[in-house]
Image (cartoon, rainbow, N blue to C red; front, side, top):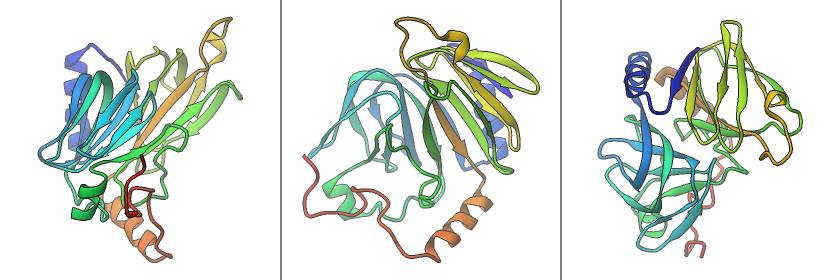
Length: 241
């Protein structure tokens, strides 16, 4: 387990180095106040952790809020108004197969609302993102997969994180990030912070895995019936308004 305060740049550098050593095709980014979503080299998974904003392309304006995921193809940028706080994951490997010229023309980027998340079954994507509501039940037991790392961020209310090696409080608004090693059980508890007027506690769980596991997921996905990964990936005749 590694606990990273949002404002501790040295800890962020150490987290980035550790993850890149574990899997060289992945990078983690601290987006304090991003006004533009862009990466020149890889696919950017931008997870909003604080603020409500609009992401704009030449044909599309998409409202986003905490827990939403915006997936941006490499080398293409999109404006964010007003600026918001993001946890960014960059994949330097193959881009999702549906990111083609027609996709760029109609949509530009892909959006996954917090209510739906970015599921593990969508193997063409490099990460999984789940927003966990701890209102009911107020405590949850989870475990990272044998080849997976989890990054955890609290959204509107603080949450207690506990593992066999200790406990920490995840402050709301992405004020800290917990990195959980593979095959590690952990507990999320909202009871300690319950009280009148408090927001419903939600935690973003971002799961990452190495390249050899990604290849296994892709092989499993394409051996089954092909399904469009999202409304954007289905490439309709015109984008949603």
